[in-house]
Length: 220
Ligand SMILES: C[S@@+](CC[C@H](N)C(=O)[O-])C[C@H]1O[C@@H](n2cnc3c(N)ncnc32)[C@H](O)[C@@H]1O
Image (cartoon, rainbow, N blue to C red):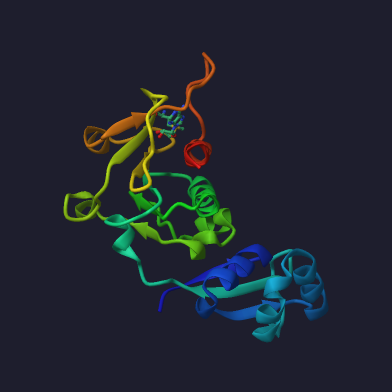
């Protein structure tokens, strides 16, 4: 079983809410303080968290940590969906990728798929998502899964030189480029439409997580 560290109250809370069976080894520094924090911020998880907690040293400042198991990859979202799938094309920054998972979960996207070398389940990405990886499928795509037998649905490429009026359909794949080089030529060539988020003259681009947020909420 592959596991990931859940460092701090928010990742543990989200994992317990969305996938309680995948959370184990919950540790709290001080049970009374953990109870007070839960009751103030997330009373719905108080019982679940404290029932599995052992007391011990926890490095995180919230005094709460756990271990999460990776869910089995749900690749059905590559082919069928009723809300857009976000496809991150070779992101470099774990913080950006985590922020995308967080906003994708909040905005009701069907999942997040990632190409390239960044492991979307790396602990730094999980920190950036506040554990919302457990709220929707988060997948790493191998090259062959981008082919016609893997990913299907209209490809909506986000790029500043696109059409600001282009639509993002529910069954669409929202393709977002990397911090440095944008969307790869291979995916640009497959675009059904290129969607731009208009910017004031002189501004070259939005941060990629901000662009995903704007595109998903514009659709909602
Ligand atoms: C930081 S930008 C990449 C900038 C990169 N230097 C380039 O040449 O595209 C990361 C990604 O966010 C999306 N993005 C950023 N600003 C955008 C905008 N105004 N309209 C549409 N997409 C945008 C694009 O998908 C872009 O590839």
